[in-house]
Image: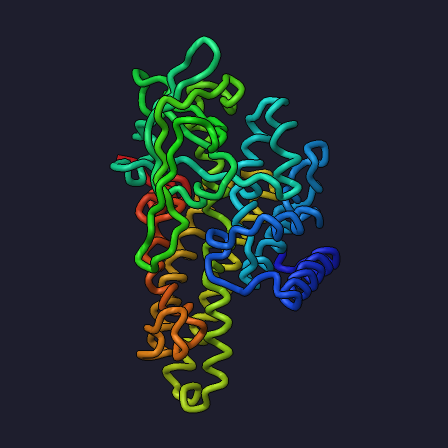
Length: 386
């Protein structure tokens, strides 16, 4: 693995930073944690798309730039570093677009890819279901084939952004009699279709980005099917590697992390304490380790390999680090670190307390740490499954 960036890549990073600094000066956004989930800004995504930074790794014949995965990671690193509102195009760019490129029909590629690249199409992911836990293959949402399409019935949960998205990339069971991994298919479903109900799930921070989505006899055409019928599981496992390997796994809280460092340096009584400096130095080192793990995944992808266990390693480490970061932030800030956003006395705009309350979800979304450790054991270390 080469630890140096090329001259072109350094130029790209500078270009992204310059764009974000200008947007900050114009007041287009305020840096925020979890901006890739909460920062749902259609206009900002269109600006990113106009610069060619969405779908950058896609083949040129699909409308992309044909850049490397390291190039894309540079773009996403800077967007997250600045806490920019990228949620509108995030799921589309990260995994839906690549899945359509790999498995979609020519008609689907023509219909969806240009709109994703322009930052004009938002997707939610319809995977998790009640009572399924991390066992995605136990899903019960059904898609029954008819003469002219499919009828979908069931429920999805923890569906980020479904109340704001245009479409949902849905997994459903199309053969109830097949072994559970072999009877699943993938669909693109317009969220405005009759029979779809989106209900909010408000978390303990009183914020709303999660949803439960109900499908009651929703009729979709045959053209909604992505790839082969009953082969959805084998398509899903590839896209989950894209989902688990991004810098959002260590940089969801980066704005708060940077503000914490700046705040401590500006408080002589606080920064003079050795135990505080040790905690902050430890955070910086842990952040750099996680960053290297994720850049390693991008490097593996440039070699043409699927980063099964590398992505799992990066995700387990990254979410563990982010949970550790929120604990350290509240320890360093003391009692004032527990104040919520909106309080005039809350340091770091209340991001520390917000991140602390949100932290339990870091090791759940994108696959639990227990499941990912199994992947590392089986695919990385070659340990027996039994």
